[in-house]
Image (cartoon, rainbow, N blue to C red; front, top):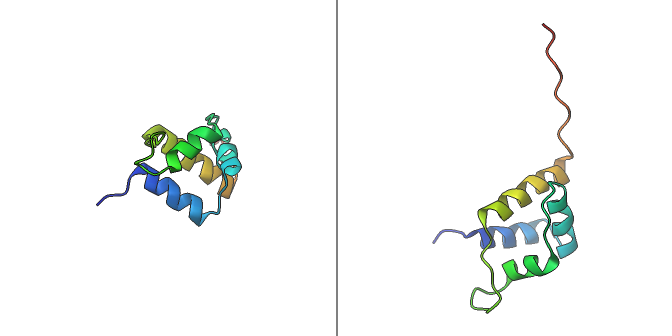
Length: 82
């Protein structure tokens, strides 16, 4: 059985000891606005009426923000001299 985006988010949340506020801040690093209620809906049981599947866009933006959160922003590129 393959992992869903929701499973990946749950595992990352536990592995990095992230809270809802942390996830909101991480998403804001890549200018991706998300609310705590949207985050909670992703972590609900799939049988819950307010469960929401984590989309590819959400996961992609979260991962990009997590890289910035852990490593820092990308340094500016040096221009090549011709």
